[in-house]
Length: 385
Image: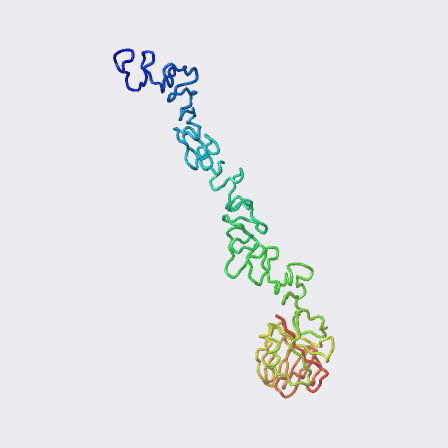
């Protein structure tokens, strides 16, 4: 209080050293106490302790408050979540865009700090590589690769674009109602993906039973039924081996001496296509045959002895009445029957007539007529879808 004179030292001085007022907290020549060794070049007095320039005395320890994580910007340690001290400010090098990975490493516009690496917006640092977890199959939704069977990453979820109805053939390519994803394209339940085209192997004449192969194309008749190329000629046929009827199944058989019920026949033969044929009993060759769609073959054309109305289908004239007769003849020919066709016509081998009146059995198989009481001829019905 009376240092070097009767006057007290001014504010900020806490000691009188050799008659001179001084602050031992900052005086490099009396640092910490009067007469202490000078701090020397490159050092200064900080809170009564000689510290190197750029450091600060924190509790008796000289620290750099610009870089020391435990004494950052002050003598206090950085809080949880911060792992570096940059220019006296606490920072998380994993997320700080201004100090990403290291102090002073700044992520530019359009980038952000991900796990200590500058990545473009929308990307994530996975082991030092910036990836898009929404689309990268090797880092999908996380830094893990998608498992076996998945070939795409769609909106952060692993998926198989060959089978996923919501991502069929590519992300966000959903299948419409009634279709499912088959090898990357949306097909109906009855269809198969054949080289990128949905086809029905049961009905497509270019992919019949298989997508490709020697028997997949129905080149002869162009009709596929139940995955088999159908024997499907146009018009009435004569002398056809039974073995030629690919795609057809026998659904009715009797002999010409049997009274036939059309109800019985149609109950047994329910498919979309019907073929009417006849032959000598047990013969491997059909004497005559013709086929068409079920509706045309069973359209009621009426009764009478004169020329009747016929239904033309597959280049054949059909007539049918469940209480009169059932048969066919070539298109353009005329016929007269009571109750069955007796006309010779242009080619008598191309005609068939079965009585359905309940009076007699069959009547005609090609040029053979008056067969009602014979078991030596057979009536056969085949069917196909």
